[in-house]
Amino acid sequence: MHFNRLYPIHAISLTLMALLLVAPTAAGVFEFAGGTNSVDVITHPTGYDGTGRKLIVTVGISPASAHAGDMEIPVQNAINTWNRLVPTIANVMTTGSNVPSDHFDFESVALHELGHCMGLAHPNLASESGLAGSDKNYTAATRGDNNVFDLDRGADGIIGSSDDIRGDDVNLHWFFKGVNNPFLLPEVIDKTTYSRDLNDLPAGHRYAVNGDRDVSKLFNIEKTEVVMQQGIQAGESQRALAADDVATLRLGMSGVDMIAGTPDDYTVELQYLGITENAHIVLALDDKVDLSVCKIVGNHINNDENHIAIQSGEISFNPGILWFFNQELTVAQSIPYVAISVNDRADSTLLRQGDNLVLRVALDPGVRNGNLADYWVKAMTPMGTFWLNDQLQFIASDTPISVYGGALMNIPSFTFFDSTTQDLPLGTYSVTFAVDDNRDQIYNATFKHAVIFTISP
Image (cartoon, rainbow, N blue to C red; front, side, top):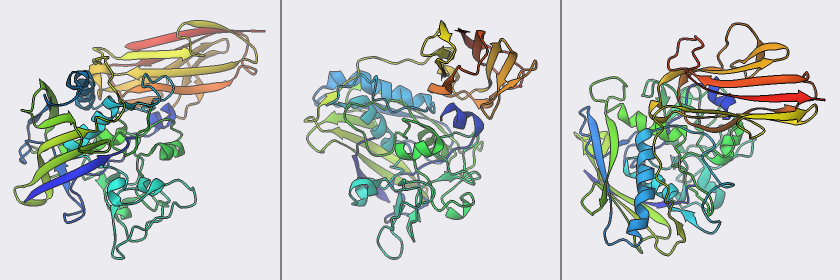
């Protein structure tokens, strides 16, 4: 059977606390699921035939496209982002973004559309539902027997959250069983840990949560949204993946048996071919859409109604839009970048007792993304040595205490202390953020950075 589908965009639109305390994540939604197809459809990238191997999916820019040369660096950046599969927090950039306030960021939109071309759909109902306004932000589903979407935002008033009341709407969103949080990433992602069945939700949850930026605030996470969520705004950039984006692609990688670690598993790599039409996915600025759209063609794998492989993809962008073409080519760090700051300074500072103290950390795992490691925050103080524990509390101890053990992941910025110094003793403090190159609960501090501050009267 042969499929075509068009997807309008959108606008695409952890704190370390949440990031460090909980390992699991929710997955997302796949193209072709629902409608005339099975709601259990898993869509795979071009080239997958049920046999485990590395898939190479080629990407080109149409030579006939307007701004073809300007598109090259943003497209390469988006390709690199998908190839790295690094989950992030705080990936919605407004303040500090280099995107003019009246422009749309081409790289962010291309990142979203490439996700469609690899089989990922919107986690929310989005514009294809025919709904208007904020109703499009409810979690993706098909209409139930009553043939209408049942939409009730629940007691918290946040659309897309766990207390939404959806009547007989049939959920399309794959979530982590018993967890239902789209902003964290587990080590194993397959059908043993993920489900569409609402009976597998945690106690008290009514519906699958999606990765909308408003929903993220319920998890104490600011400025975070999954890339595949529909809804970007002018003047902002969203050039990094959230956990749900990574989890959904990896769920597909578990193959037709949907069990990780078996022979039908695959990996996928996007490969940029340049300005050419001879590629699996071709991008172009043309006059076919209002903002951007992805058109994909797919076939069932070995007549399996629940598994479809994409055959080709075309991505169109409206040339009449004010596009911002980022011209900074990003590359992965060869070793993890680890940083800590005190009041936004990366070295040392002098504080008066009663001043506000803000401590933040950042981490770019580079090519070691996904490697298991121990995370540490150590504070040398006038009162002795303290360690940040997994409840984000400083504990006095001569024996190291780790704050987290798990995969290295991208943390653009996380504030773990923001308070007055009024109750802190006078003197000098040294705070170190460190990650190891293994996970053994031994303080190796392979990659680290420290800041010093002094509190005076």
